[in-house]
Amino acid sequence: MKLLFKIFFLSFLTISLSGCSSMGKGMVEAFFEQQNTIDTRVCEIWGKAFDGLSPFLDNKKGKMKVLMVHGVGDHLPGYSTQFVEKLAAELDLPVMSAQKKNITLTSIYDSSKNLGNLSIVRLLSKDRSKELMFYELTWSAITAKQKEVLAYDNSGEYSFRRAEINNLMKKFSNDTGPDPLIYLGESKEDILVSFEQAFCWMIKSDWQNLPDGVSKACAFNSEGLAANLKIDQYAVVSHSLGSRITIDGVQRIAARIDRRDGDFREALKQKKIRIYMMSNQLPMLQLGQKLPEVSNQKQSYCQPGGDKYEKRVLANTPIIAFSDPNDLLSYAIPSGFVDKYLDSRLCADVTNVNINVAKI
Image 1 (cartoon, rainbow, N blue to C red):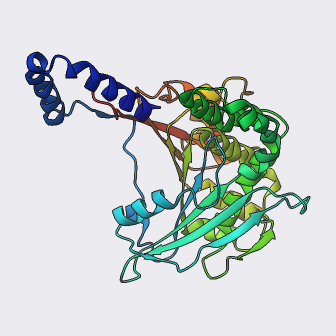
Image 2: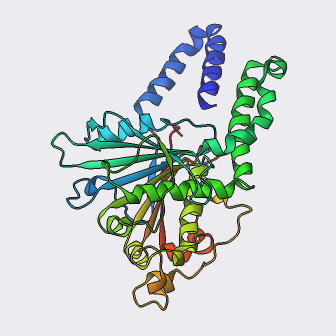
Image 3: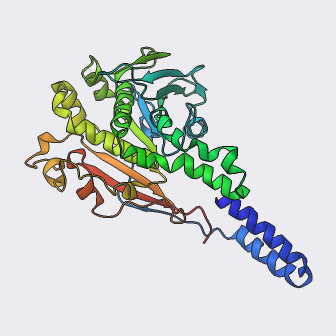
């Protein structure tokens, strides 16, 4: 939309100026020259300092593993390719596995379910001393069937009656608008199981032992998970609705922690799992959600010496929320949100990163 608006605005500006170029040319040129020389965009950070991924790439005992969870709209496996390539360039990891591995996610209790796709790629430094495994979760298959209800509205029978710009907007709306509504309905359970399965596979295996081209479920009580938890480092990158899915998915794991083996629970207690939220919409997507089972008890669960410290689920969950004040659907996470709306057992901290893309 921003691009379309800019094109429209510049076209209008060109037509308007053509009739008064002798009077306005110098002023307009000066304005645009000033825009090009003065960068008024801002990047502001509120909250605790946070780690990036780079310090954990040369982990001699384990691996650095990153899971990406997409947001609204139909996505196909491979949607994260540009992100992965830029990440690899920034981290100086130019060696990529020749082929990705793909797992069709399913449920332990119902193997007939298609819960999306998990695609895994391995990144290495030239000397092989640094390594990152990137897991891309695509859950769109779960909502695709229900979104077919609106498919007729994109057909020529209806679309030709609209102005071109309105037709583009309607297609975008039909693609993205239903997902939050579907998530709040019956499909929420399947989407959260999809996240759990992706999270489980991220913990479970190294590159050599990961399956490929199969439909298979991962069990949290599988042998080796606790051992990997102790040595590997984990992070999640999410976008829009994906941030809600990530938080709900981690809270679901917390709510079922008593079902896990003791070794797994103890290993998870020592773990810090970083969550990087892009185009953050967590506050808006909290609307209509139930409060977590445990809230407003962070001191008890997260401070050594707290009366419930041994019952925490994670040692720490740093949430780094990226938002743009000029993005209509982007929100910072306000003070007090964590205590009230996030499970206290996650021991979450929030750092807001305000990136102003537009010049102001």
